[in-house]
Length: 265
View 1: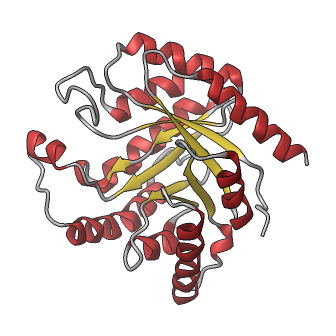
View 2: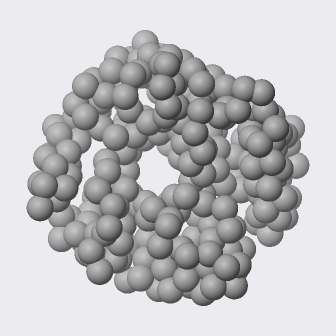
């Protein structure tokens, strides 16, 4: 099938090995280029290179980007549910939503997941648990977050989109079916096709039409033909990961041109 939604291009600015001033400049360049979404990630240490290298915290950076930018949506790819009380996460998300609104509708995307990088947990004193226990915690947190959004004063400026990252077939995709506006995975086209079938089964079980969910994946080193296979399966949001301080903005420009051609067709 062909994606019913417009194609969107996101860029994940990796908040590692670079001064914040450079991150700020890159964000400005990307917004000016027409990128749809700016993501960072929610870790406390670099994921590649020197594990003791420069690194910045996710949520405080997102608040700064919300104030700095005017058009582009922003979020984490993805927030780690384990690090913060669910009601606090909801309040932080609502606050960034308002910071980003600039007198209109907010631009914050609540990207979340169960967490996986044990070094973060060990260094900051969080219990790592198991894959299953962390997913159970996420399942308990999401209804609390949604309920807190209903009670906050002032309320969010919009229904804050929930992006859930991960592809576990029993628990994660069921959470996606129940709660997500966007599902993000790293799947290639054959895997994506199979996972979408499983997601549809979960949708039937929880009583939701999963065609409402935007399908998101990574571009990475995929060819144009591979990306267009994913478009044919229904994917419409594609993320490029950028390594600062000297990101390949020419590649971003090429994918933006492709996006514009797809949306004009």
